[in-house]
Length: 171
Ligand code: HEC
Ligand code: HEC
Ligand code: HEC
Image (cartoon, protein in one colour):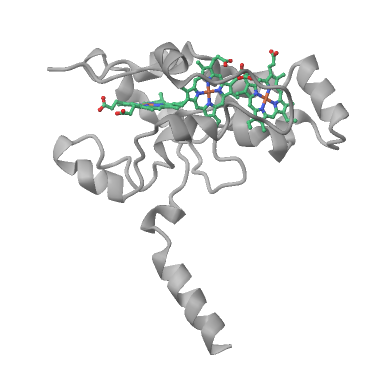
């Protein structure tokens, strides 16, 4: 018993401080539409990620759900939302909208803990400590490459990244 409690205590205290971060939604990331920032929101809006939730309303989505024996609509099914949206089943703030699909925070981490500080370069380390993630090939492969729900295209990181890259302009 004592051992179990010890393990529990260790586990709880070792959880990253940002485990409680809430998803705030891409609507909150408007500063990232300034040209000097790199217009990440525009890049994202034109990407398939912005449509990922809408895809769940298609006839094809309904067929997949039926074939898998899932009893709810695709737009409600956690089996689909985990890849076609952001923050499914997680803590979210009022500003968050699941309809916006695979949002910034799917790759950069739930933002409630870092949104107020990450805009200043001198806060970079602090923002990372508060849960800001960089995102890389591993992040993509959470959703791309293989899939229990339907056939998936082979995933080529370099090629895919070219389609959705959104760097901050230099200078
Ligand atoms: C949370 C899940 C998730 C993550 C993480 C994710 N994607 Fe996607 N991605 C999707 C879904 C779902 C679609 C299909 C959206 C649609 O067509 O409705 C998609 C579509 C795309 C497309 C359009 C072409 C295609 O395959 O349909 C590209 C390019 C892409 N993703 C690149 C990336 C890259 C690069 C990363 C990592 C940096 C990444 N994605 C991370 C879920 C994700
Ligand atoms: C599919 C995953 C994915 C999504 C969605 C996504 N990003 Fe990114 N983002 C990345 C990756 C990967 C990088 C590159 C990280 C690196 O190498 O610096 C990146 C880089 C960035 C950078 C540049 C950092 C730098 O130092 O130049 C900014 C700013 C950024 N993202 C903001 C956003 C915003 C705002 C959104 C939503 C509108 C968004 N991202 C959506 C994966 C994503
Ligand atoms: C592991 C992540 C993942 C899960 C889980 C997932 N999808 Fe997808 N889905 C994707 C990706 C990524 C794409 C883009 C195509 C590709 O890369 O294969 C996609 C594409 C689609 C498409 C478009 C296919 C086309 O040919 O136009 C539909 C429809 C779809 N998914 C429905 C669903 C439904 C319904 C569920 C739940 C039963 C679901 N997906 C679960 C990742 C996922």
